[in-house]
Structures are given as C-alpha cells and as structure tokens.
Length: 60
Image (cartoon, rainbow, N blue to C red; front, side):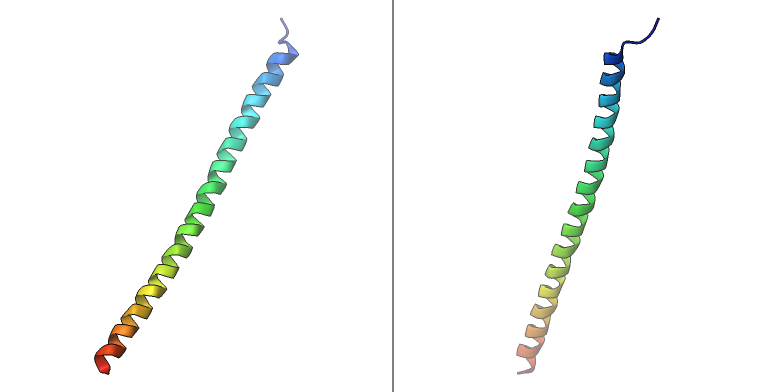
C-alpha cells in the first residue's frame, strides 16, 4: 500500500508554501516596524524643532 508520488508532491508543496508564507509575513512585519520607527523619529525631530522655535520666539 504505497503512497502515490503525486500525493507526496502535493503535501510537499503545501508544506513549502506554508513555510514561505510564514517567512514572508515575518519579513513584512519587520519592514513595517522599521518604517514605523523611522516615521516616529522624523516626527519626534519635528516636535523638537517646533519646541525650539517656540522657545526662541518667547525669548525674543
């Protein structure tokens, strides 16, 4: 009672597909987090510049 080769090929394809889906999802999450961190840094720099501008305008 041997398992047909096409069944083995289909199961292998499903396993490989699942592995690639998990791997791609992880990479996308990492890229998204890096993008969010960069946007946050830009926002914080802008807030700091605005704060400095307000302090300068109060001193003048």
